[in-house]
Length: 478
Image 1 (spheres, rainbow, N blue to C red):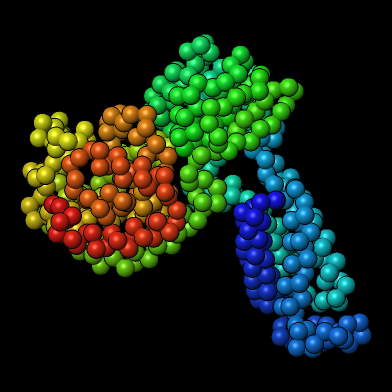
Image 2: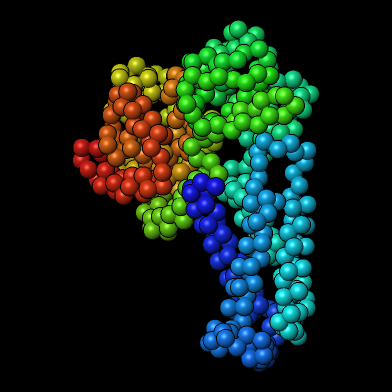
């Protein structure tokens, strides 16, 4: 096992040990032990057992909490030795979701272990009703933190809501029962001659991604033995999950990491270049949610003041919702304080001729639609603070490429479409370096730089630098 995987499993083990231990100690102290006198009697039984069987252990180490910690540790070690708990293979054939079966298995394993331990260590006289409820609680935690799939769902990215596009995959193909496909929705299925397949894949993926969200590309190959170089580079840089099902062993032009599975003489190649997926997505979402809640509390007086000011200047609505494009092309409604006159969007087409020349995006230096006296809300990005709600919902992140309108997305080429493969953000590299640039090439440069170098540390650095960028005269606009 690679060092990286060992570290990953160790961190997950420590986290789960901590969560289960804290939950068990809290629940027993609050609900299972009848009272403190009862808990002390249990402690005396442990001391008696120590004196009889293992007096080499220091008396100060003999506590109920220490016993719970050791029991949980032993149970998790045993559990982590099984592939049942630690390994979920997306390339397994799966005909149902099995969450109930998995929960039932964990329920039996946990309760047979813990109740046997309670009997062995003479922990008796407990509240039976609360103990029954406890028997359901820990297996639920074990299932919840088993892998990233369930946590991702709770944090806003459900596998069952993701879509894929397939090429030359038969409608009733047994490969559709692969876990990676069975839980996702087939948005489009195309049949193309393999001679023109490389170019058609690039065209169709780009076209579909501009109208709907897709996170997986599936390609069925029967005759090809080597991928076209342009297609191979495109798929590698696509920042999505890619599944190749081939009758032949494929030769690749470049070196990259992939998984190979052979099923009934068919070769299945799978590589996942999805940047924000699994544990990385979970860490980013937890960070975003915690920081966004804190920022909402911190800026609450400013939010209230801005809402009152907008209402006094131009009545309601104070907040507006704009249709934007998010992760993998998903459409969502972005919140903003309304700083333009009502129905200002109707003048957008008339003002396009005045839009900044170096950008295909709609951007004005001096927008006549802004309500008099509210320019400072845009200058210091106060109008964007309601997007903290979008971050909490999971439509956006604190850091990432700015979410754009659907019509702007139509202008992207196949390379710039990669910006849709990370969560859009309230701020990003562009905002801290060249906030008001009218040069689309600069947008392109900073967005791709962020995508290729993303990590949580970079997000924190960008957030800290955003504070100074907002108040920098050079970067502040109206």
